[in-house]
Length: 112
Image 1 (tube, rainbow, N blue to C red):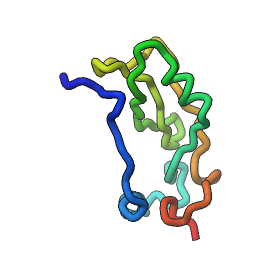
Image 2: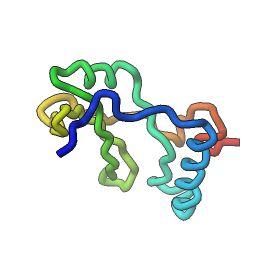
Image 3: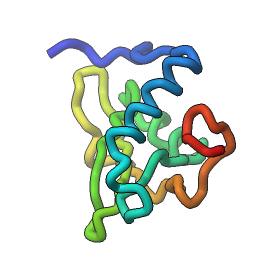
């Protein structure tokens, strides 16, 4: 298994991010207005830092999930450099979903 590096990930241009988020909204247009119509999740700095501060944590894995009502969730779990999910550590949810709590920025979340 390849190493999970702390440097994994990088910046992308706003135009590419806007294109990809628009693709997602277009592919999921049938869900518009339904419980599963989540476009984004907001996690505060504190919970992200708590996960990263765990011993041997190299980064965060974000797992797509559905709760019992069908609402989309994003579960965060620390991951070691060896690619092991730190399931005995902090596992996060309770993000603020969009909608209804959308940050401003029409290019990424499709708000006009």
